Length: 522
Image (cartoon, rainbow, N blue to C red; front, side, top):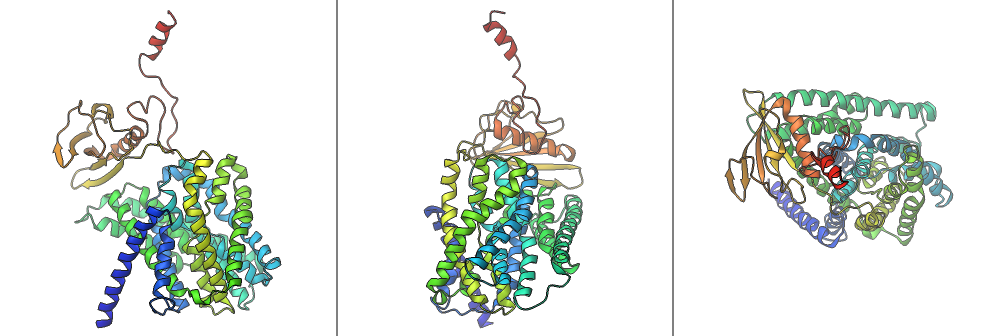
């Protein structure tokens, strides 16, 4: 019990240090994930002396953390935004990944002098972009929705095929023969991915059907149920021998975009779980790393591999994957630079260590150097690159926050809507929201005080609205409020619509044609 108490004390102190490191990182422009890694390295053999060298346990805990990070990414992803980008993202996650692996394999074999299996393993380990890094960095940038969605969806999808390829290449590098040949292995990878996606769809559909129809006794149970359901998808996928990573991500996206009660609370809880997973994961990987083990050759190889991947492999993979979709060259350039690596390559580097591959610790150190150097370089530079390419819009409006809770014994929902800083809903009157019949803005909470509004009351930044609506009208109201938040009171007239909704022809405000005729003398 004494050891458990001590572990709780040390764990809480480490978590608090990591939280304040994240705060410091946002102030100085460094990715918080790197600071978590440095915290772990400071606690290790070269720092406070905590010893951790169990690669098998690190591999297992790393995969568990990755499941929770993918679940958080899926639950907080808006399907309406990523749907137009699924094609480019899927190509980047599959074809782009294969191109990157092939190019890096050639570099490792002919330039670094590695054996072909180890070179292929280096290519596979460094191929995937990291969902934690992408989600934490990009969601603070006012990028075009399609561009951000492509990067987020790619990082959520590409983990699944790479995990299978790393396991295959590790087996070859440790002397196991390739059963059935490359074509059979490729077919099995495709079948596992498709099977995992279908399993995620099925379990997600069941969750979307059940959760809105069950009024749980406490709102805090909904986030717990959503996370547990997503993790169950991973476990079910592993049990039936399909890709658990594909299953958990697809299932999480479905749950996060269904008519989920207390959806904002679920997303906030998922973000908290994601942060805890990232902190624990990077601190653990920092403990596993040993700065004293690094040599100048290892550092040089890590930087060289990162330069080649960033300057050659990633741009080539982006071009081959997106040329079919006619993406503007500015989007392709940003996609090439924003292929952030983070925890995933380091986790994958523990797989050969857990299988006791010769010189696996050297591969781990090379990947560690590569991730540290290029995450520190790419992460802080993304806003500047986006501005130089003309992709960052600092004046873009922010979406309103909408929370929903089912009302027991009647077929209705209570929506809680918050008007955030930057929303164009500020300045709109309650009447201009044009709520459907039988839906009513029952209460406005402003500066800690509440009042029952009339149609002439003007909304302000920070207002919270309580809207009672029939369940059948909920989707219409959410769409309408999102439109107003982005385009103001005339959003519908000027064709400002939510992503994924068919664009209506832009209409002129009433009377505009009459005024034009008068100006012409008509």
